Length: 498
Ligand code: 6PG
Image 1 (spheres, helix red, strand yellow):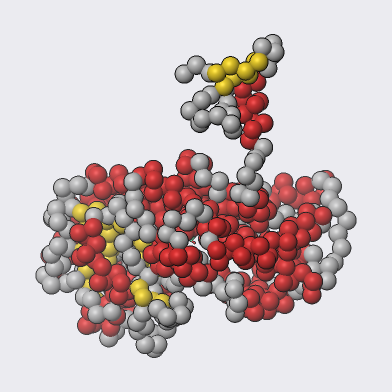
Image 2 (spheres, rainbow, N blue to C red):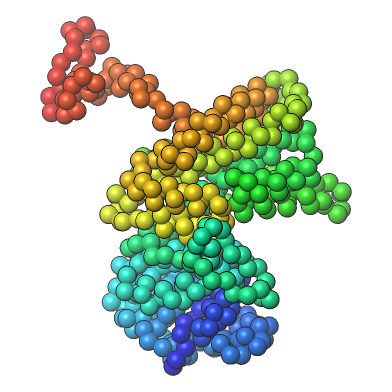
């Protein structure tokens, strides 16, 4: 009973986490309900597994093998399976001080409920993970939350297995092959806060991921439809952009994807893939949470709606023949490529601002203390939205911890000032050519709404008071005073009774 940690669930994520931990020198007991998976992981990864990783046949053996307090990682599908395994573990002899870490894409409210229901039976902890299978194997971004004492037991392993960033340059020290040396650097694994907060932060990460992907797709569509640039050439532009301010994993893979040609048809691969986007729910949760908390995360929400709309292919096909649009023309790529990169960058500032605004609202609502410098730092490498941009965000919060909104950080206000006209021109052109850019235009309206010291909401208040006597406050009076105007009979304004 001296094994450091157990991993339950040996699908791609679980198996890769187990190998990652073993390679980092921790002893791992691996279990999966599927026997083939158990034997496979040990067989396929000799000699690493011979020294550090064993497969166990059942949960009783797993419990017996582990050092105490036991540390057990669950890598199983989010939802009821998590509870089935937790209850099986209790039945197999888990103790109150043992720590079970849920790493699935669980709903953050479910995590809070689970911590409550398992209190006294074991220590339910969560660790959201981003980075897909390569990340899990070579260095993911980790968002742990739960009991602080449990974190102290997990921290050395978590920080060892996570992605690493060069502390001087802020750039990921990438590793994607076993032959490459193990990187050292700043770990992308920091304690986020009480149970629920880690999965909330991961949910926001995914909302931002949706917006990033949608905005990239809109820009690619502009290049292909309005500029007439071929898929391969667009791919080259993206590979070029990946060397500059837009450097990020999603820009990089877009460049790679667009250069791939389908062997069967000779067409760009991207054109033979059905244009109906899937979604597993985390973007939807982010948009719903934004509505719940009253945070105007419109660019993120539009990216979820865009996926919904994409699935309406048959209606879109009818619309393409029946709904009128403008005449289209091909524009000069030399004029537009730079403007598109500015539009994308500005929109990105807004969608990240929305994500951070959402976390700030949740922090207040749930009494968490979120460290935005740390969150931006752990997203710099390992995760799907990894980008040099996140190093800039961490520096923005470092410089101004009480930042009201990310857009207002000096480094971003300057960029926005320089690039906003290009951003507007892109959108104006897209509108005149009838090409939808839902997420980028939502970002622009978010930006413009926050530039409005006096907004049109006065009229909304007047209408509410007109039809429903809902009262309003005056700009020239104390905020505690409410008024009602007698719009119907002209008897003027009255102080509202409380
Ligand atoms: C990550 C990803 C991952 C997510 C997929 C698919 O951070 O590694 O966010 O957790 O499951 O990206 O998400 P959708 O199916 O909703 O696109």
